Length: 188
Image (cartoon, rainbow, N blue to C red):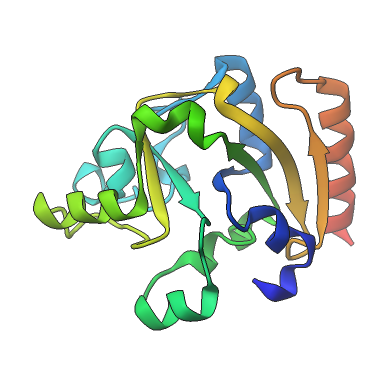
């Protein structure tokens, strides 16, 4: 994560959800990150083969989160060498950028499964066919209200470009400006 500039320092220690920039509007309109948003399975991570292959968070009725509290890439990769966390960080390559939403841990504490608790659930309930980022993925059980999101930004250029916006007091015009800037940059 060290070559990601400001993105590394922003993510480190926090609890985050990431999404494609074009999907943010549905979160704003719903006033929540929904467990079952109106998105076709082919457009969601690891769902192309139906419910039997859904990721662990979706299987349990939750929202997948990245818990970067105490995260150290080098030691994590030694402990979990087949983890695909680089697929999502700084963003899914096909997206060419991502929106990162910081979740306020204290606000969601009652609905939060830590990475350790989620991994234990995965093991104990025999959910081994479900994708999980062990030791990094946390889950919020149920829809996650927008009021639990503290900060938000759009990232691109391998995480070197970040543009903040306020998710709670959402300014459509400002966000559209951020989108245009990102779209122009990725076209170059």
